[in-house]
Length: 206
Image (tube, rainbow, N blue to C red; front, side, top):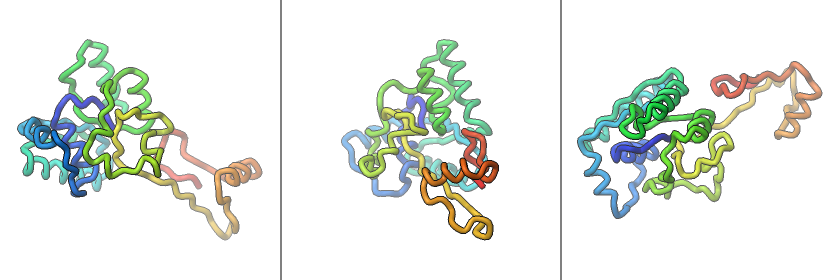
């Protein structure tokens, strides 16, 4: 999840939603960041298709408003690619600052597209967030990747997801236990394993 952090307020919002009420790290310029952000508005472009996520963003925005005087506007997207296209259009038109998107929640596909088209902030910033210290990149090196694309410190983790395989034990008593076994099962049983067309993430294999 990342885009161009032109606003100090966007940085603070990213810090806040990353780990919410986890104990805030003490950094030398944190108070200065808070004060510089006061009175600003952050336009957070994020998928709006889940009520729980929308409620969380609203809660985080309310906390920032009451604590730090920052207004968060959740720009609800049906398709994140639309925001990426808007950013690309603004860049093509020569608008390198003051764009319509302050902060963007992206998936790996859109992150790679933005990186490829030079739409991300050039300087690394994610690992300078005070809350980065609560991650463990040594134990979870994938935290620096998005869909196997190196983030280069220009995208901050929003969360983690996992894939769950479901099978009917009446039809398959012993399911594959690892990726190699799954590949062998698929080859040996054409038509018995289905999956959503990449990069769709909303459906489950069956």
